[in-house]
Length: 548
Image (tube, rainbow, N blue to C red; front, side, top):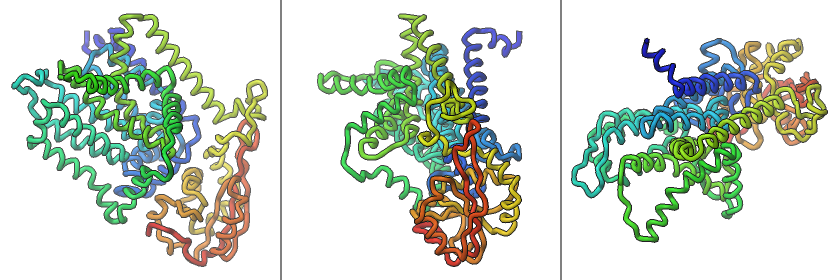
């Protein structure tokens, strides 16, 4: 019997294939139907302006977002997510292999199931084209490499003089992988510091400091992150300044907000998974505090303790750090999720222990969680695309109950619908031929508009924002290059009534006239309106507080 066929005959291996393939198909369905979020569409613009780095993120998200359109020649919500879908499948495989290497195949199977079920993992990392997708791939690869390096030999008790750990070439690979994580999102630097913290607090692994492999790893890490550094040197360190400002308190500390951050994280992880993950995260910390106060000594009894120390060092700084920051500023739920991703390894091992006590209980927990998550995700997907909860809607269940005016999801733009409207309007076609560029009033609106214009027109798009939050647009064009040119101004209903916007634009252009309105419908009901204006002759550069 061939090795591959023999491998597939085992029930545990069949479960792994089912989770990987089933999860891939489920995420592909979501990616196909869900309208692009504003962030994803904005990152599509990254792929049109390839560079070493960008104002708000490193360059890797440009490659993962552009992968699908470059491969297929089509620009759609599915193609811009193709890179993320594949990255997440790779991340799941790496997480499974890491758990199997540290614990067991059974623990690895449970870890894979948990990571497949959790909605924030499967959507935030595995569907949406965000910097988190390549980040979690290289995070997982780094963790697997770290385990292969630091836990490849059984470790002696710290009282033993013999130190069996000998640094190897894997440290050099680890330096590159952590650098690639940094090139995905700045969270990668926290990962690197966590690995350093592990080496310093694990006595057998302090030998790393004296190893030439470690210094080679550092050199390769610096080379790998050089695109970020070189781009920022050329642009007054604007990315580091922008990101660091997010960590600076602007008001007093509110412990109630910390509690809200905690509950939000649990909700996005899904409560039946979020609460156990938090419990596993805090358990070692509380135990260590108890040891300190009870003056008990702490020793490395076996390799399992060392593995837990490694996982906690790369996970807890992210979890606790961003939860703490939530006390003085609003944070996004995804910011702490790479930490919980690592903790799933510990939860997977804990589930093995729970299974010995109640196999049926574990099965009900995982199966019930999976069914609930799939059901909720499908309901949300149907609401976002056809409005099954919307009132009114031709697809509403029991007449619907969520009025259009109270539904923030109506701000998402169906780019296929908008593209058809653009292509069917003779007025817009003529205006595009007589215009040198398009502008909008918010950086995040430009992405859906640019996607909708493909392949109708190849025309530059920029952002004129009176609030001066123009992100990457500050570096994709020069303020002076549009002077004397005609443009199209495209915006949506919430901004069309802004008198300050219209006054600002009329002071910069010789004339500004509305030429077309496009109604965006969901469930047969108008939920948004796109307004198109012809702007004649830009008289002076639009003010920018940063950029070129």
